Length: 184
Image (cartoon, rainbow, N blue to C red; front, side):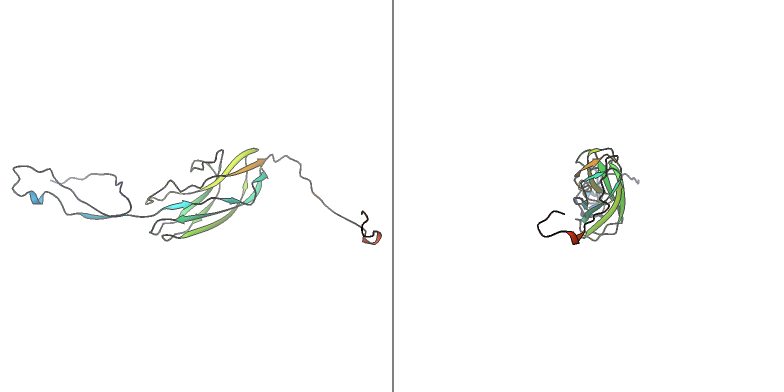
């Protein structure tokens, strides 16, 4: 008789063999054939890790554009598929995939051990207060470790977008009417 089934494989990356055996029966005349030959399976070693995010400003008014810089490493030994990096806005320092997206970037195919550097720019819209900005790489289906796909958060202070903005528009002086040491 033939049978099939599903199960999870919770083994570390590498090459494994899967087979099946029937319970031994004392009346079995040939117990040597109670197990199948193994079928080779491969558990890929892919691990995207998002490093900390640096910002062009950590205090700015809501609605201002800022620049984000981060890196994503493939800490595994095998090549990844393309993925997405999502810059996130959070109300705490623990950045997660559930936090609000600010902007995204396409992560290219990464060889094992390869690092990808990214710089992105976006406008940050949020209520005035203390927030955190970080980034998360989307989880890949064959990824061996997913707990490091999000960076830690970088604290930012977002100011009200209605605060005054003082601008120096012109400076003038007459260099012909002053001597060294005098006020101008």
